Amino acid sequence: MRKIVPSTSLMLFRNITRIKNRIRPYAGQAHKADITQLESSYYIHEAKALGVQASILENNVLQLRRNGAVQNIYRAFTDLDGEGTLMIAGDKVFCSSMLRRHGIPIPESVVLKSGDHRGAAEFRRRIGAPIVIKPAKNTGDSKGVFIRPDSGFAIWRAVNLAGQFGNEILAERFHEDTNYRLLFCRGKFLAASSRNPARVVGDGIHTVRELIHRANAGRLPTAREITAYDPATRPILYRIPVTGELRALVKRQGFSMNSIPQEGKVVMLQDICHWLYGGEYLDVTDEVSPDFIELGKKVVDILGIKLAGIDLIAQDIRVARPGKFFVNEVNTSPALLVHYEVQNRREMRPVAREIIRSMFS
Image 1 (cartoon, helix red, strand yellow):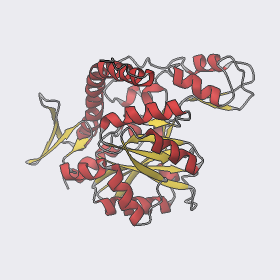
Image 2 (cartoon, rainbow, N blue to C red):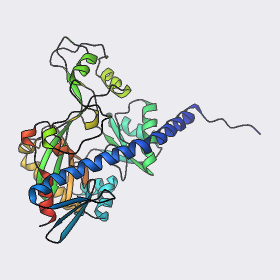
Image 3 (cartoon, rainbow, N blue to C red):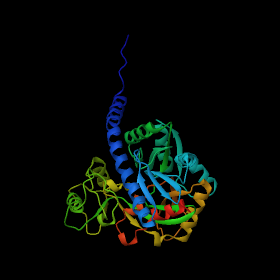
Image 4 (cartoon, rainbow, N blue to C red):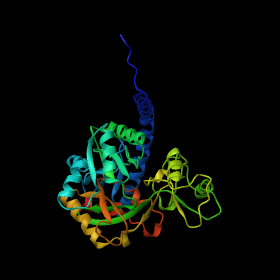
């Protein structure tokens, strides 16, 4: 009987999957513990300001008590929204269809079966623009998200890795404008932050490598444990790691690590903002157009979510120009770090305080 030898691409994918599965449990557990501590610390800090009793239970649940009433919080999950609401927000396909039905602008997209790299490649050819590939359900914090896979292999890899999170994936048109997070609680707008990927600005003297080194001066190593919130320790910036993805993005902009960008030239180092990889948050609450606030209220009403973080991609947060903004995702029980870990500290909004007030109102 002839022995069947797996193709080179299949063997490569199996190796990628094997390595990924070995690393994920350990990295995930550490990240989970850190984020649990960090998210709880925002609520603990604000509970003290409100005179609300706060205690961490053995299973890392934060319990808040006031006048006989009790509210429980685990990581970013609160008693404001139940499991049914989590199922709604976690289903990106359902959310997209609901928002599209009500005339909310969302990125052009297609739902594909996991592993359908031909369908993803065809979608990219049809729209003639870069795409994003991500799981269709029940993920967050950029898990399984691949930005601008261009080559056939990059699309194949992205489709297969994103597909490990479920039976379906989404391929969406990629928009290069700024990503904003708008926070709503019981229909009330609380705050907005811009999420800015790591970048450097040329000075006509230093290379890209040197600019990154200079930008990293004074930043914390990402391997360091995330510290509980304390206004005295903020703002925090984490180092920008030099990875293969970073080098590829620099090259895509026409530079190498040894290039000297001209003065004022912005060189992007990430496609998507991630705080632990050098991304930055800025509070922009006072800049948000009233039209975007009304849009957000409509979105949370359509989906029936009490505590929601709306991810908005917009050219200008101050003006809602048709065709220049899109609702990218809606997150129930959103993480608050994008509002507390802002670099413009004077503008920081104590959103956990308002959420606690709402919990006990």
